[in-house]
Length: 249
Figure 1: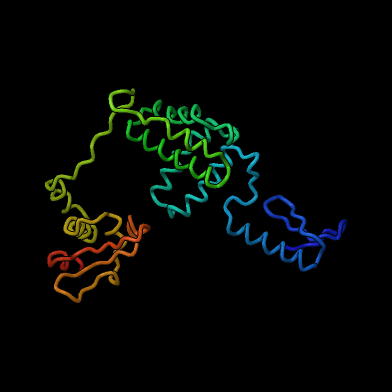
Figure 2 (figure 1 turned 135 degrees about the horizontal axis):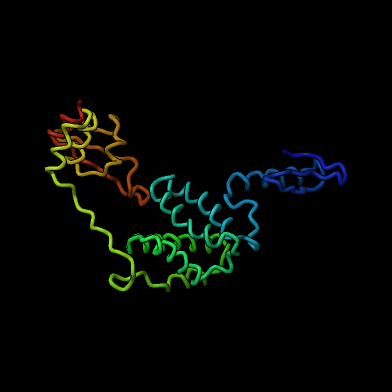
């Protein structure tokens, strides 16, 4: 709130434990300064962070606030949050300017020692590289940080101690057929519709009647939200007769 500091006759504002002096109380300049300060506080996720003394723990907190909005709290946000764990556990008090290739490799080793697969370790390292890029973009680190970390080669197959992850293969149709009788009716129809449309599980779960266009013989479903919607791509599902029966239930 906009308040008077009686000792100096100045307008002050208190935000997150810090007092801001705005100039002569009740002057147009102090009112304008107050409005700008509040607007910055509401729109800038890094508000109040001193860039010259930023620790890795503070940087992680600021980045995850940004990532939560950018990734809409989805699975990639969860992955980014997990990727930042070694930063907090190993380098919480380290100054951002002191972070570099050696700490980056130590964070990667954090996952190696836990017996994670080579693919998973490389994926987490890529996420940390994305975090470093954000630090540079926000002015928290020098561009040399991101350029330097990009020079670190990912772990190679057969040249590290990490196990290889099992390939992800489609579920056998026989296993699906044996499972269907044990599912509730709605879930059973969802599984069948999923197989017929060839879409992602999350897209099936988000379907609503308003998304289905039934004017033509082959119905169409236009998904407003999907994996590549941020690229401006349109995703349309064609619904044949067998799938239409499931949609009507």
